Length: 164
Image 1 (cartoon, rainbow, N blue to C red):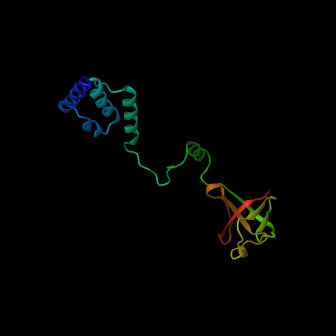
Image 2: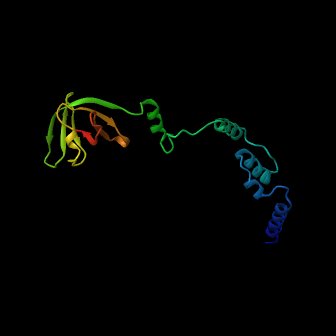
Image 3: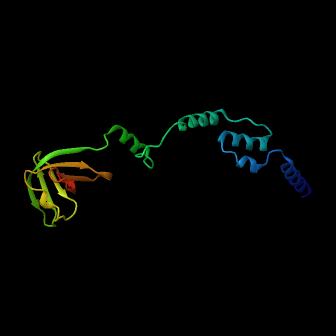
């Protein structure tokens, strides 16, 4: 018991009179320098890891003179960021309406001149007056996998999904 108390007292006195305190290490912003400070407190040697220094230097070089764009990829997964780099920002299809039918649920189906069948996502009655047979339309890819049908003459949008 006396040995443990003696060891504890020695360690605490060493920490009290050390030239570098643990609080000093915690306040250092640089990762490699902070790690070197902690290493010094534990081992008595101060050698910063080359790997950390290289990573820190490269990250500082990347941040200098770099501005964050308004349409940044913050919050996207790695796969999503790769997909946005490969594909254009907006994809669309131009066609015209060849046939319009109503479903039993009240939704509207549009058969296009390219034989694709699209259906409204919800029961929309107020905006359907602009979507008539032979109306030029554009189907634009929206966010999160949705699609918008846009009437070219009036620029009215309705949410649609492809049936076939």
